[in-house]
Image (cartoon, rainbow, N blue to C red):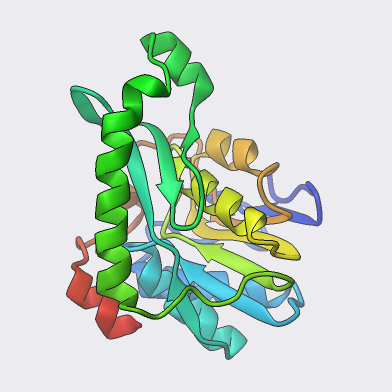
Length: 229
């Protein structure tokens, strides 16, 4: 698959495709961000706001914002893990938004949203801590009526991206764009209905983790995020 259209623009460039192919793995998030920035710039956005999902999305968003010549900020999200198996995300929450859960996964695990209330409370607290660390008393930039680009370094299950898109939509964005360098093909397709535009540079057929598509994929600290902001 080279390109298909869903909503206004849904572009997936697969490894080895002709014309617009990208070479994987990316060197690092900054290189991926520079390539992604060109595709986002082609959308012709009006009064765009770039929001990064920290921590990994921040270096990517920095490059996108530079190309668009606009400031950028973070939209903090947190995964809601399965009780007893926290690495398994069953939902997510974004600042300013409500929790978004994977209903099918909850059904398979015989869990209800009520069962997750303690976990959700803990993640809300950690989300608030990170918002304070990254932004202090400064409010999230105004979203209503603007074209908003949500940026991350990749999509695996897409839970945090879905929560972020829902929060941005609820705040009244006029156009919601999801932009990532690489993503699992099925996740990209599933999220195409959550945004007006989805721009993904590569959707490999076999996808285990975001980090496998970068030569350098260091874990970022709060200090690294603040330095870029």
